[in-house]
Image (cartoon, rainbow, N blue to C red; front, side, top):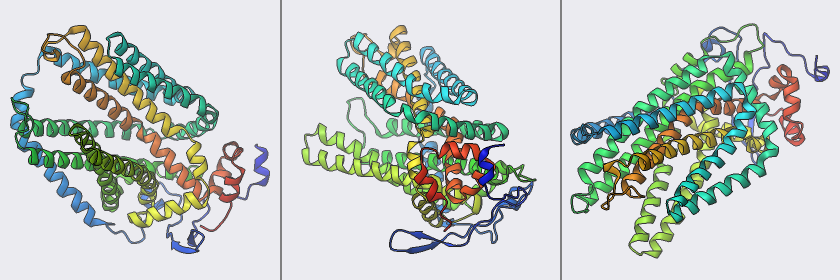
Length: 502
């Protein structure tokens, strides 16, 4: 038995510590905000463990907004399909081989990484950092060897950034490995998490295919004509922004439904894994709640992120157009807007992820959950530990590596086979429009597949942190050794966690 057990409070496995109904203090001004969440009950059924006292469809107008957006998006796909089908029907053998090769690379690298993640978490974190150095170096060497100076310089700089960053964060790897082992251990005991990952990847892949059809169809119908001029510039710009927003919004909702589903599994583990009964249907029940009572709240939060991200992307495109037309004032203005929107997106996305865990477990409306999540994390001082945790960063870096791998495979294929459709007017394959677009689509596919497949680990980590902020005594009683190791380097955070005002 651990020596920490001697100082632990008594803990009844059949009845974990109850939630407090005390108000949450927000800021030095003493502003109060009630977080009405209920005690989890030992049960085989998730709905009984995390009951909704008065079930209601939270933020339902935003669920209506999402359905309207989905219908409009599908309508655009159908409207442009007739033009797309004609083009797709002429895909030749080289294009088919390239598509198959990129698909195989993305899937093999992604699920190969998951195998490593499940068996050797520490190796995965290190690999996520170092593989990007190798991939960026390979792309830099390839570009320089083909006399593409600026591309080579860009990837060389990126390689240097990866190396400097890795040397700076190595000290944080042991803590991240400890937490990752904990998160993976839960997933191993609940195989439904990997089924959720596979289902999410499949659904997202189908949606991404529809998004590609929408983008390509828009370009064919309103894009450049034979003379290199836009067929209808106002309509093309408007439809481009529409596709960008709807695609982002739908993808956000799909991702957040997946996140909320995983939150149900990890919330059940956190509170009830040591009780006499723990929900056996947490994954399915959390999914059911996410697409019914809590769906409006998920759509609400996703809409906020999507609007900000669309603004950032549009500002980025407008910035390039202003640069091409020589408008310095416009370039600076759009650049400022892009930076501001990117910062806002990062802040809102961070808050949303923690809010969705509360939405999933307790059926809160979005604003209630967001304010509660912010108060929990900030007032309990857990942001220091979250910022030092490299799990999400490692997952993102590994997704970036898969993107690099798909891009590298597509580049090697193009320059090895020299397909006619990728050649320029001189009959050579170089860095032309066709090659750039091919590489971009390949890398985007690799990043997308890897991100969705590993998102269950990120969602589990987020849920663990928000539960730790809410009820640290549960984790301290059930996992005393891990608790002591996690907070050995964060005594101030541990003291704040003991404040019993939630």
